[in-house]
Image (cartoon, one colour):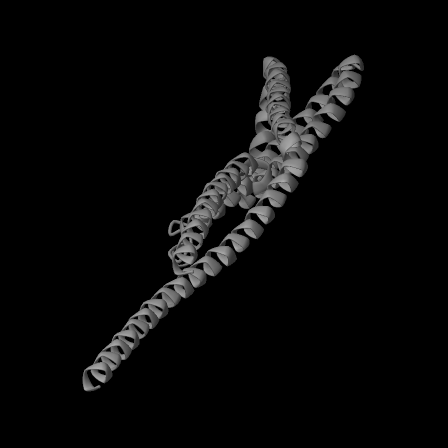
Length: 268
């Protein structure tokens, strides 16, 4: 009787130990499964966010391509043509000034009068010539970074260049006024009429040059026109990187799902 009772208790204890061991194993597997599920949920959320970011950057890429991609090359080509046109007009203006000045100097009786008038006009112009201070506003330039210093010096050079061109234009007009007076005294009307036609052209050329300068300066201020190709390439590289990363996340997600299915089949 006692032996039967002992055997029954041993069997009960063994069964209880098996149940406790099975429960511990099931609890461990359940915890592991929960960890896998949490990891999968994190990957799903991350994959969703990456997908939204990829979609946004793809939309931005398409928009930039539509706005600037097709017209960027033609716009840069037009800017180059404007720059070339500006140089041609500048060369024409200089050649007109040089050729007409040569004709004036060739007249001996008129040379002294032109020289004296030139000296008088120089007396008027020297007072308005832009003089650059020796320290070049050192206190102000000291606190500028490289880009600010570059734009500041470029602006000052543009001002000096325009001032110089303006003074050259004034001197040219004075020369042609003296020349018209000279030919008027000589009784020749044909050069005067020719001078009037050329004078109109000379007055128009500097204005056109200034307008072209303004266009070129505005073009330099617009980064989308000059750096658009580089920005689009950078955006394209970023988009490709996101696509590769998204593909890796999808592969990892599929692998984790397979591991969960395998673990679930072992538990049940």
